[in-house]
Amino acid sequence: MGFPEVKFRVVENRKCPHFNYGDTFCVTGIAIAMKSDEDNSYITTSVVHTPYERKSCKILNADLTRLIIQYERGDKIPVCMINCSGCTGSIRLEHNKDDLFSLEDNDAILSDELASMMNLLSGFAFFKSIDQNNLDKVMQYFRMKTFKSGDIIIRKGEVGGNFFIIASGSVSVLNEGGIAISTLSKGDVFGEMSLICNERVSATIQVKEPASILYIDRDNFTKIIDRYPTVQLYFSRIMANRLNKSNTIRAADLSSGMIGNLSDIPAEALFQTLNMNCKTGILTINELSKGTARFSFRQGSLIKAKYAELSGESAFYEILKEYGGRFRFTPGIPPEEFETPEIGYFMKLLMEGMRRLDEVKPRPTN
Image (cartoon, rainbow, N blue to C red; front, side):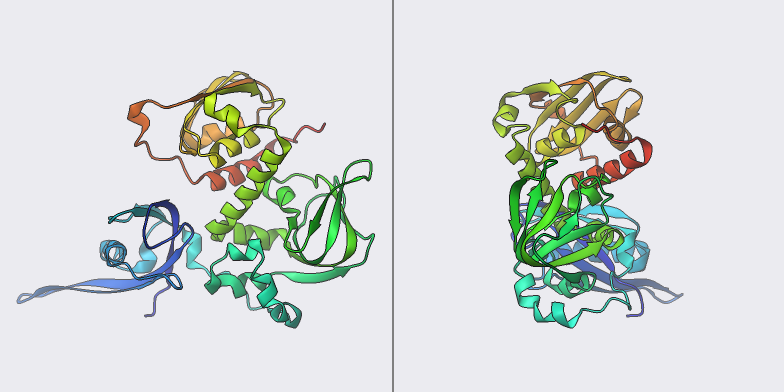
């Protein structure tokens, strides 16, 4: 139609019968008022591309068309979040200006080796988190490298530069003494935490059996994270699973209330666990450098944040700088907070906070 498409992604699903979290809709169109002495007409055209293998929804199409009419052109729609009008359920969608641009790159070409492995790779958990329409685009940014037994892929303490997926073979995760503490095999991933949290590599990875490893550099990894909410959800689940395995915080403790110290549990881990366990309650943190902080959660979403003179996102980012203080989580929130809108999509807040933290203050080492 001559105008760029804009994208809306589902960031919240309230029992919608048609769509899932992370589904993407492409919208384009124009609206023109035709006025003259004899006529006063309004012409509008809009095209809404529904995600692959999803049924078209007239209610949602009407909601998106109203945006075309309001802003006259699809590509003039500003950054926003909207709620569909709803039927038996509803969804919330987000539009970001970055979505005007494609992830495609003329220099990114899917190698013959990767093309021949498409069926295998598409079954991996990471690639399952990506919409089928975008799978080829994302795979273009990966490269393949083979390793022999005994090769070191990354070392503890190095600056993280790549995200890795094991296509075949296996690797060992080594502790500081060089002892294997776990094994990763086909479909498993590593290296993501150093990129997401801007930390140095936390463990050495050594090839156990000859392996073929997919990898992607930091810049392209960040592009994928920013533009595909379902990938963010995939990594948030990994982070939550690792927290659960380490028994840092038990979900049972959260249901009845919890107290502890930030010196034992980093703020980002505490917030992440409350989010992934969909907890509702108030987190109070005392004995901080700037006084007391208070955060409210509803079903895992952060809806209120206050620390010293800061509130909202600013308070959340500031608390991540704290490595001391005592916290208490109390289940339940006041009735007047039941409808309070969330501050922002949690994984985006967390990733942005960790990036800012790395720029401002070195993280303490054990």
